[in-house]
Image (tube, rainbow, N blue to C red; front, side):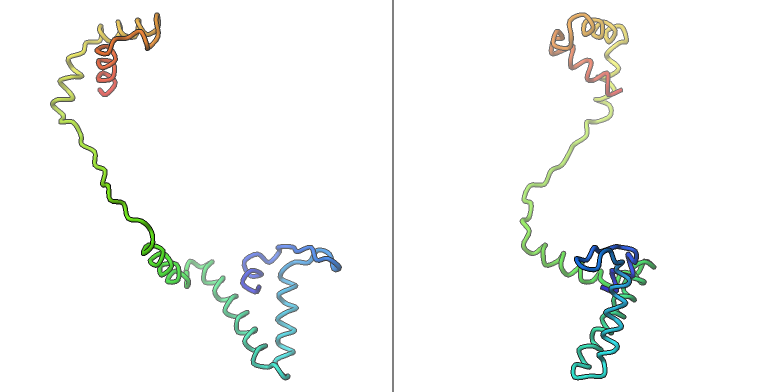
Length: 143
């Protein structure tokens, strides 16, 4: 609770009979109760609560400073999860066309041919093109 109160001190809880109370006041109340209870029959438990409050405060302050003390826990959990995740058997690779092949196709198409194809698209739509015209237009777009 102290860690949360350190991170978001003005977060408000709406308690049933008490109304809206900020979490920093709730955490402060529990710290005072644990401190007062540290000299009684359950002194070890209350001192442990105070120690947990201190660690929560220090942890959040370090996290705000950019030091993550819990990164090793995340690393261990990710490793454990990785043991049970399925491995991919398929490796996908992409091959590029050779640059000479690409430029020879693109340069073989003149601007007049492209203009003719574009005029045909504006008149009858893309579906009116033949397979060769679609391929020429596609290759010209790679230029």
